[in-house]
Length: 74
Image 1: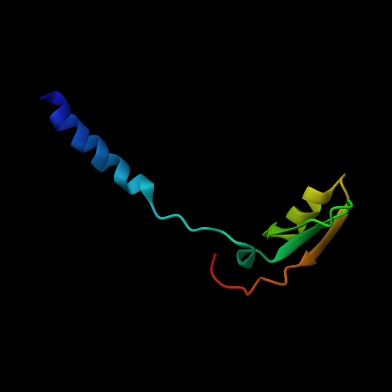
Image 2: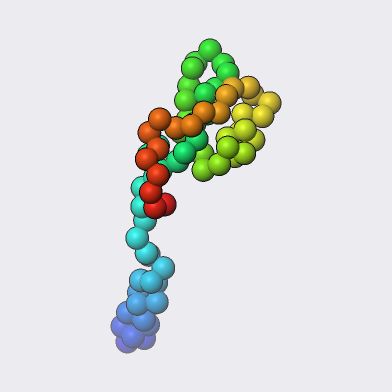
């Protein structure tokens, strides 16, 4: 009997925590890292130039503006 009362209250209490999640893509970030190794890998998931530079610190590479970024709400 207790679980019949407690369980719905617990579920109702966690519903606001679920929220809506938005998937992030390269279109959401203005900076890309071009890694300095032979792979030629590119990662376009940096919100700031400083964040990009910090990631490349010690491993080498270059930060460029993302060709995919179109601005907009994040």
